[in-house]
Image 1 (cartoon, rainbow, N blue to C red):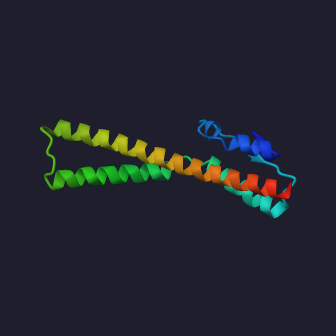
Image 2 (cartoon, helix red, strand yellow; image 1 turned 90 degrees about the vertical axis):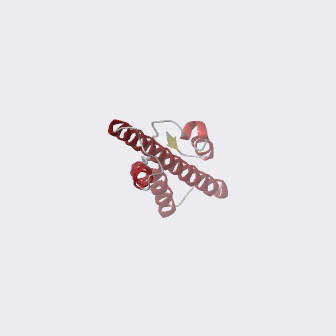
Image 3 (cartoon, one colour; image 1 turned 45 degrees about the vertical axis):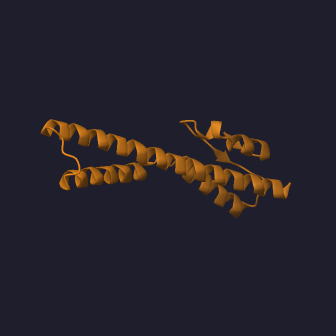
Length: 126
């Protein structure tokens, strides 16, 4: 989606558009000076391309740490080794998905804020 005016910026900042799996946004705002336009373009590009991988890895590490602490402190003891491995695998998957979801949500919130900032910039110059 080519962002060239207030209308396209407003449309791009709607949640329906932001939650799409494939985001392709390009800013070309003739109303905004070159260096400021580059800053806005950089912010939008960075957040549109964010995948949440770092947060997914952090979620995995956190959930597995809690799981291993629970085993070590005898807070929870599975009935068998197979049960412990299955629970550990399930917790790893859940932790990864939770972290990934939170990372993508953070990126989309930041993207929306960058788009709203660009919209304000365009409206101020109009």
